[in-house]
Amino acid sequence: MTTFTVEAPGATLAVEQLGDPTKQTLLFMNGSGTTLETSKLLLGPLAKHFHLVAFDYRGAGNSQTSATTWTMAEYAADCAAIVDCLKLDQVLVLGLSFGGMVALEFAVTYPARVRRLALWCTSAGGEAGSSYPLELIDRGAGGEADSYRRRLLDRRFTDEYLSDHEEARNLADLMASGSRTRPVSDENYRVQMSARRHHDVSDRLNALTMDTFVGMGRFDGIAPLANGEAIAARVPTATLRSYDGGHGFFVQDRRAFPDVISFLSGEH
Image (cartoon, rainbow, N blue to C red; front, top):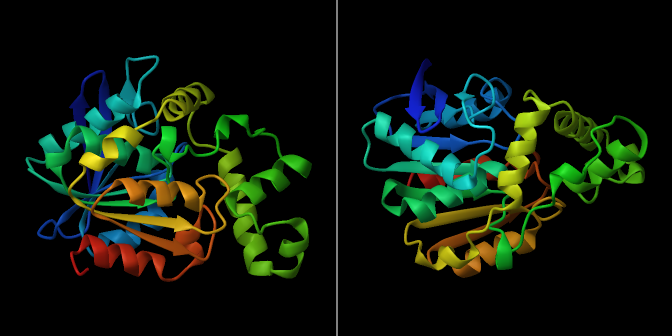
């Protein structure tokens, strides 16, 4: 693993490279409220197959910014600055949840920079449907707040269901805790949520020509399957796959990682 910084307009971005640099470069964008440090379990499997590049969003982790507010367009420009720094014409792209929104903004703004586009549990906004407004979830612990979080993450995760499914209960508790205890400041998370709330690329999707993979969880209460169907219907080159899981289907359904790796590798 190597780490370096990239200068972008109004920000200094902390970037990591993992895996074999002779392989295809995959730019990974994780969910809201995350950092490189909290993404290790996702980065490892991807780094086995690609030259993986991941980064802290501006205002999160070790990335710095002088701005007090920023937009999805600026997140996309940050991605372009990283690709420029790597001196690459194109990269593979995988965006997860909020990272899928960033990936979509990057793809519609800089289409020539994206060789293949993979999206997990995300939404395009506007007429194509928006993800659940996470800022409405109470950050408090216990009782109804945690129960509500769990059902958003996976609509099956009722108290009754979890009492009979220990493995699902452990996953639900871990995911609900992660959504409650974020490694970014409240202020920077608020700015992320503002950018997320205004995200809408629905009227630009039909211009995308790169092969696109849309992976969605059938029981996702944050980014419903219908939102993935709306993306796939608007991107002429899109393939939609649904999985047995919720917003974390990529750890619930064993098909998810092999499918996206196969797609990004150009095997289908």
